[in-house]
Amino acid sequence: MPSSWSVRRDASPEDSRLLIERAHDELLAGNASDHRLLDVRALVRESWRRSLASLVGAEGLPPLELGDDALDAYRREHPLASTIEMIRTLLLPGGADDSGVVVAVGDAAGRLLWVEGDRGIRNLTGDMGFVPGTNWSEEAIGTSAPGTAIAVGRSVQIRGAEHFNRLVQPWSCTAAPVHDPETRRLLGVIDVTGGAEAVTPQAQLLVDATARAIEGELLVSRLRARASTPPRRRTPRRVESARATLRVLGRDRALLELAGTEVETVTELGTRHAEILLMLAVHRQGLSAERLGELVYGDAAAVDTLRPELVRLRRVLEKSAPQLVPASRPYRLTAALETDAHHVLSLLDRGAHRVALAAYRGEVLPDSTAPGVEEFRDTVRTGLREALMAEASVDVLLAFAETDAASDDIDLLRLCLSMLPPRSPKRAGLVARIERLDAAD
Image (cartoon, rainbow, N blue to C red; front, side, top):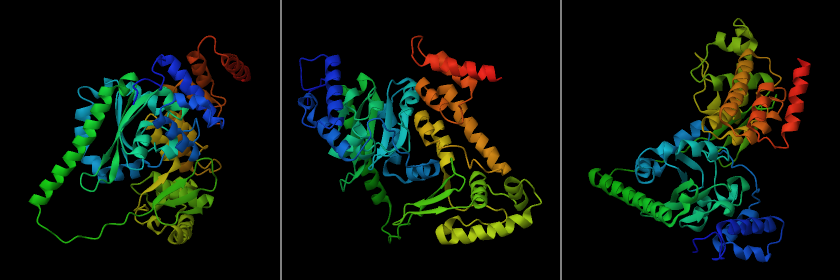
């Protein structure tokens, strides 16, 4: 495998990058037989074609497939959980926060479970959705080291412009799959992402060696466990219940989605039922009848109105999601219920600002006047605004400024103006918007 950007060994890195970008453009334009594609490594060329066949967009964001609760539970049970400290020791020796690279560990489907390393790089890569819970398989995001390593079953290096997705092209990465040491079943993938230092021959040797060390550690741990544990009868494997998500962003009638079973179901809820279920999802510790009445109706004395509504909600849930039927005294949910609003807050916590903004479909139950909903709506809106203004890049802030939630936010517009280069053509439009808002005041 050539170590340069392309198969043309006499090309400079900059020329190679331009050749690859042109080949990428030709492929996207439908010119699959264009001679420029011969300037691209066969590994990358075939990955691009698989990406096209999967209808992957050239500038999309990876889907978030694991929210906070699901991610925490899945990580605890994952076979690679016991090796995370070894991975840190081998790939992030010394101070991880200024290591110059980011190390990610994903599962066999390409979903990132752990992302650690240089804080500055994590903030930047978070903007393209390189955070725990997102899917980086080829089918989801196109050519990248984690997804392509899974697809071809060996370690790979993907350099800058070789990424199928343009948002990922500022970065380079090396990844290697990890297999079960006994069955050879794919367990997951290890990735190192950064600049040019992430795709050196030494980086590939190190990542490969780390994957083999993990497989060896898993085998040794199993042999020790077998030697110290007497044989016992197998117990039936616990069947994981369906994952429930309440979608309330930009919707007056919430959608309750259940995934993880053979048949996925979607139930539309009326406004009052959506308000009650959302309040129980926000207040996981439980609520008294009086407090729930206050949050939904604005009156602690509305218990007599609340109880019949809860009876009707229970009937709906018994048919569609029996695990979510609320318990009483206090009213509470005994099974996990995620919301798309909590997903946005979680993405912000992980530094995935661009993905969080894309996931923000609008305000929480926008027409609801329930006090608890209004409070949570403000929490989500404010959390999004403050996180973006504190850490997001200017292009993300400009996209936020185009949403209804921030269209008249003069402080945000001024921040965008201060971050733009002096010759940016976007400055004139911002100045005009700021002047209009100043005049309106």
